[in-house]
Image (tube, rainbow, N blue to C red; front, side, top):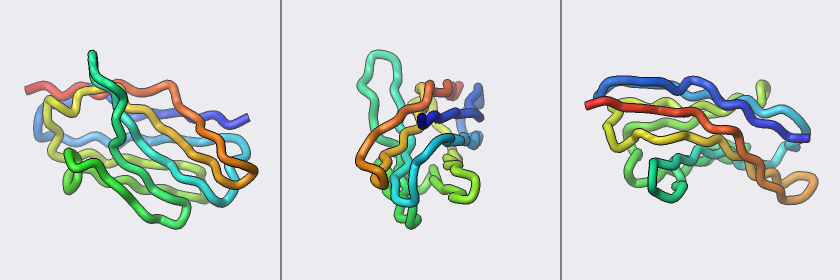
Length: 118
């Protein structure tokens, strides 16, 4: 069974930084895509960034240049370094993994709250 556990959220002032972590346990295989999504109150969940098992990354326009996604395959862990945070970045951030090996499946973490004060 695949499980994801996020950590690192919190309250920060505008312009500050936070680093989120997502540890994945279970059989995810060698081919997968890990990603971060976020959902603000009253809004739909949106993509923030993704990273493949080979290291290719993709970012939402709203975070390009401010956020950096990375991963450590030896630890089955993904990170999201968030710099120059803005109040509009306030949301619950969810970790996601698209497993390709063993058949395509999607898994989600429980989410971690990020609040940016102005």
